[in-house]
Image 1: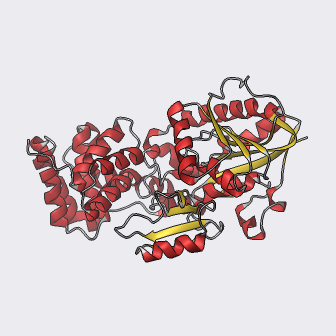
Image 2: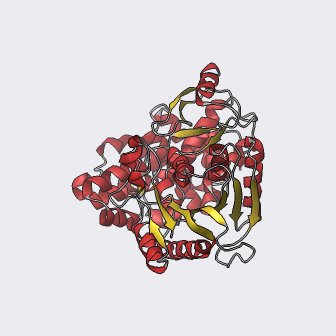
Image 3: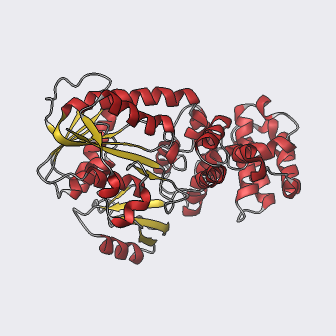
Amino acid sequence: MRDPKPEDARYGAFNILQRVEQGGYADRLLDSYLNRHPTMDTRERGLLTELVYGILRLRGRLDFALSLFSRQKLQRLEADALLLLRLGAYQLLELDRIPPHAAVHATVELAHQVGMGRISGLVNGTLRTLQRERDTIAWPTPDNLRAYLQHVCSLPNWLAKELLRQFPNIESQALAEALTEAAPQTLRVNTLKTDRESLLAALAEAGHLARPCRYLSEGVILEKRAAQILPGDRDGWYQVQDEASMLIAHLLDTQPGEKVLDACAAPGGKTTHIAALTNNQAHILALDKHSRRVELINQGAERLGCQGIETHTWDLTEVPGFLEHESFDRILVDAPCSGLGVLRRNPESRWSRQPADIKELAALQQTILGQTAPLLRPGGHLLYSVCTFTTAETDIVVKKFLSSHPDFVQEDLRTLLPTEWTELTTDTGSVRTLPHHHNGMDAFFAVRFVKN
């Protein structure tokens, strides 16, 4: 075995993707790897990020191509062997800036570096054939939409069927294509410390290319990053957060002096946004079932200068007996969900989620809503939100909640939001964002109830 090269992007990607296959989370593993190798070249860091996220997003597409040229069926290959082939195939099919011969050679070298030299012939032969024949691949077309969603848009079979069941054909295709793209890099300006114009000016001075978000006055989209770190990182000028996620605190519409429960708060982006929108004048109790994640809320609040936030570890599958009934003015239930709306950011979920998960999560969402409903005062507002688009976790959850809680009424958000936001609403008065319709935003769903 040759000496590994930990600051080489391909070696790092192999290492991270190995651990993702074992159940790790790509974003956390990538951050940890980059932090352990601070001297890694900027170009290598960029390539490492591209390889990790790109291969996870497009695994189905890569496997379709590899299956045409591999001497062995992909299902029979060792996991590490298939991972090497995917690394090479991604460079050949998706990265124009890497010469094909360099992509093949580097992948064969990587096989030796990670102790897989015995299959270097298989890797070399398969990738060289793919290099020669890639222009002859008969990719499925939208005329055979299910195959197109699976093998071009890289969706597992069950998820392709779910999209076709839920959306018209052209909508299924557009959403699936959007989910293959890299997610935009979006920042929420921390208005407790600065404003958007000042942050945009500081970003430009540091060489970053950025522009305002379309819907949120505190949102910024990073179109191209420079080598320098983002200005104001240590001083808490911003929070990394998608524009759709930023909508949630606005929809809750907390007023200064009100008492708020953020029921599933970690890692705290929406919690700190509520604090900022009320200029630290709200009283917020943030709950999460994991103590380590509760600590993330505390760390984020300190960095951003947020006050009035109290945290507590609690699993809301259990009755929160320490909380007084009808004691909160507003409650946010940003519930655990399948996360299918943020597949671009958490692409490993594309392959780890199963249909049974949807049913289990919908039941969990009902439980959490049921545990929090008694805590809201009459006339108070409860906002339910999820970063997914499945009917089971959105419309059906709402219907069941209203059926079992006759003292709650769904509010029509179309009558409560700024005019420019009405395109984000549905004909039932909820908010639903989709990346192919709403400027690349993540897919989110939100509905607000009032307690009679």
